[in-house]
Amino acid sequence: MRKRTGLLTLASLLALAGCQGYTPAGDGEGSFARGKLEMSAPPAQVARFHELDADDNGSIDPSEARTDTDLMAGFGTLDQDSDRQLSLKEFLAGQ
Image (cartoon, rainbow, N blue to C red; front, top):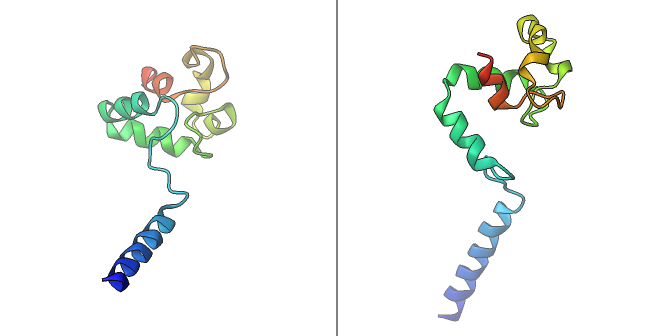
């Protein structure tokens, strides 16, 4: 019985060690709202946002927007909070 309990404990510890450093998609501040927005938006637009967000930080900055001339032309208008980054919400509002 002790041997079985020890093996079970070892298997549990190995499984937990494999999960170390794992961060589920959408974790972090505002993740629920972002996830909800992504689920309600047209998939092609969400995919385009992620394609343009080259550094995958959740926003599009001017250097990333330069790859899309139409987006770059309207960047200042779309950037509603003037932080020089387009959030998914701002990006979708301009589509």
